[in-house]
Amino acid sequence: MRCMIRTHLDTGATNEAFKDGRMPGVLKDLLGKLNPECAYFGLSEGVRSWFIVCDLDDPSQFPALFEDLFVDLHAEIEITPVMNQEDLMKGFSRLKSGQR
Image 1: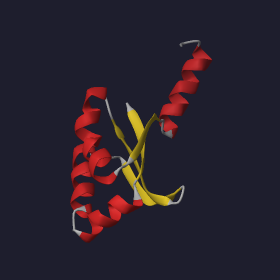
Image 2: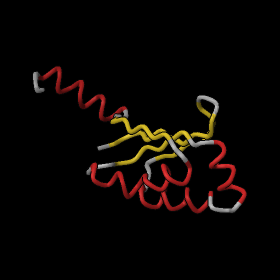
Image 3: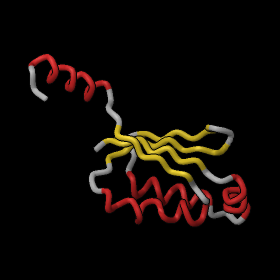
Image 4: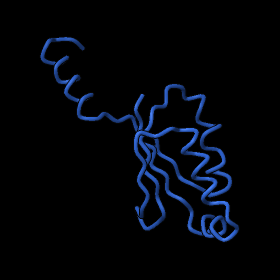
């Protein structure tokens, strides 16, 4: 299922990860595991944030994917199912045809 993963990173923990050189590796490792459709990086709610869209089919993947972010970066992670325009139009056509 296509999901958007919103990650807010703790400022203190990420400052330390930048100082000791871990931060690029943490991101590279996560993106390698997720193989995202797209990824954006910036500020949200006043903290460093990542917005990553990828397919997550099995919730049992979550601990292996995200536990390091919780432990090392004190991250807050939100996973939300999302659709692209093609998915939305497909859903609309199902409504029109009476399929639910």
